[in-house]
Image 1 (cartoon, rainbow, N blue to C red):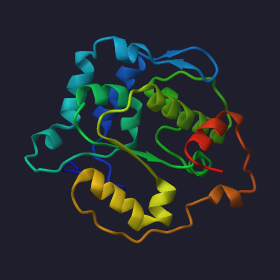
Image 2: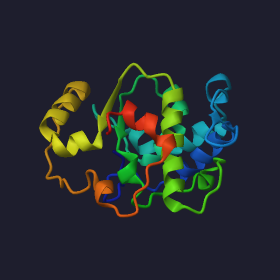
Image 3: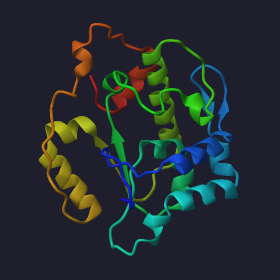
Length: 211
């Protein structure tokens, strides 16, 4: 997972990952509203600046001789198309969470402009977070699935940990540890007095089995 990780298990320091996100953003064309054209991410050559940044960020992982190695950091989603092109044979875990819960807390990617992505500005912080989630979801959908890929819902990991870990173990090919998890983060939005349903999230919610 890298020589240095933070309490959340993210590989640090993250600066070169963030810079790589900003390089890729130059190849995403905003078409207004909630529409982005990702076609150049798949048709144009990946610039050396990007591959150099990722190679530097992952240097300790790439040089590690262990049989099993990898990394985790949420911003990988912002560069997923090019990561997949650079590493077509690795195993990808797509971690999904109900965005109605996700937007209740702050994230590094709350304002996509910090990473060079254009979108329709809003002063509503929760809507801004929802737009970020929606953008990343659309980016994932636009990217062809790699040959080694699995989707895991956060809620399934919390509420059905054993079953979910068994799926992951079968996918990864090695045993995983068990941890104590709290159920409170699941469906927090139902207790939120300020909750508002956002129309643009509805199809994504259904596609991921959220009611």
